[in-house]
Length: 109
Image 1 (cartoon, rainbow, N blue to C red):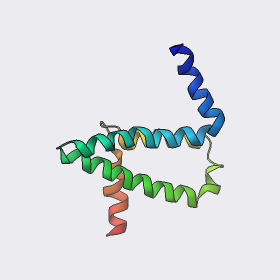
Image 2 (tube, rainbow, N blue to C red):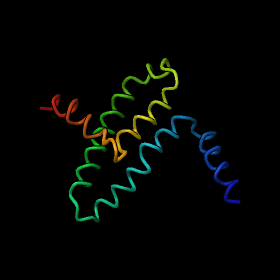
Image 3 (tube, rainbow, N blue to C red):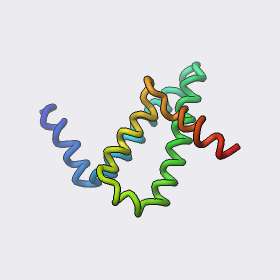
């Protein structure tokens, strides 16, 4: 049963919302869970990490919705988006801090 549900659930999610829904879930579910855990922790480093991630996520979402007509021309766009989100929040890379410090922060200042 478990093996069947591991295949069936992603297939149903894909049929309902396609690649966009899957990429949105990848960008939201794990970071939301970790953000809830960070709220209860005493370590401020994880609070800053997830606050930075959500800032980058919001900017990316705004840019994506503004330029949504361009995304259809990019091959494998949603798979690239999934890789980008994973890079943003993966503890080894901490891409959100890099994007925030090098791109978003200078523009806002």
